[in-house]
Amino acid sequence: MIKAVGHWILQTFMPSYLQTDLGYSQSLSYGVTVLGLLAIAILVPFMGLLSDRIGRKPVMIAGCVGFLVLTYPTLMLMSAGNFAAAAVAMVILGVFMAAYDGASSAAMAELFPTSIRYGSMAIAYNLSVAVFGGITPYFATFLIASTGNRFAPAFYVMAAALITLIVVLRARETAKLPLPR
Image 1 (cartoon, rainbow, N blue to C red):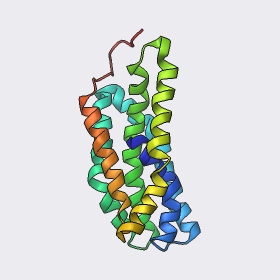
Image 2 (image 1 turned 180 degrees about the vertical axis):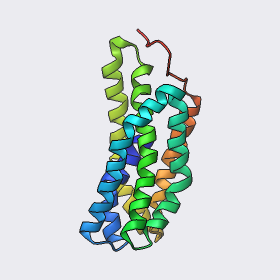
Image 3 (image 1 turned 60 degrees about the vertical axis):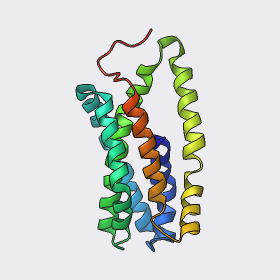
Image 4 (image 1 turned 90 degrees about the vertical axis):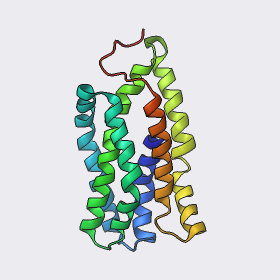
């Protein structure tokens, strides 16, 4: 769930949020977003390597806990009104997304036997993205409009992180185990 919600918040919702709700110019909002996505792109391979060393679960847990604890404060930091603060906040969120992405991609593949791996991963991943990620920009906008709190989208991200964290805590560690056949 956090993989879908996190990406849709960072990639799709954030540029308009920075402009509409926080008053950034279009160029600054896109610049902040690009920096966050660049952090993800750079860090995912390193997070994957880290998950090879210490396990998938600890890295995914770190990503979930990071989103759970720091999403609201990072949105508040973005509201400072300057590019540097918003960029730092977005990169912080990017680090948590990279942590979850780097470990979860391998973990998903390791959960399924070879004979059904691609189909199982595709169905599970794409259903999650469609259901949870697809509604994210609309739901985040709805939360702001219905509560009057411009930081309300943080609660949706935090809920997704909490649900994902519970699932990850219950899942088996897949690193360093033979792949199911």
